[in-house]
Image (tube, rainbow, N blue to C red; front, side):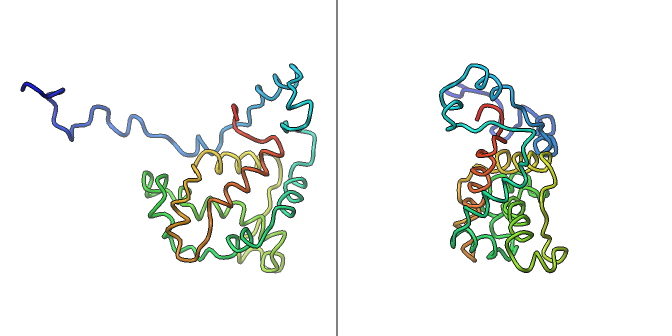
Length: 194
């Protein structure tokens, strides 16, 4: 067997997949960690002192602030992507997260975008104000809900835009995820190290 790096067949697995599987609820339920933010405040880091880097304020009304920021960020492109999804599932065929976990509906790009879409429908769309149960409109109740939203948009999407290219309706799911990331960053609700 000269010239071969290994005598194992190519398709033989070295580590069984079930030993390395990740429970997605562990990702979605990660706690909000602000150690690095506290260090930056204590060290009087210039970007924090100047207000360029926002830090999490547990005493602030973060849900109300999220709604204000969302209202200011709405544009024709964003609103078109908010209302254009028909939940056909074509985006799942392109998403590497959904392809790795095909039986997990929370990995579909439509589900990820629906997290911000629910809030939009509840507060800015007439259907969600009149018939919220019908269009699955909702609103975050507290910072725990915002933290869960953070874990979804930062932890289960890389914003590669493959879902956008595959969407027959032209919904830009990546822009919704980026919008949500931007709003949460403005609130200081970000993963540790960002």
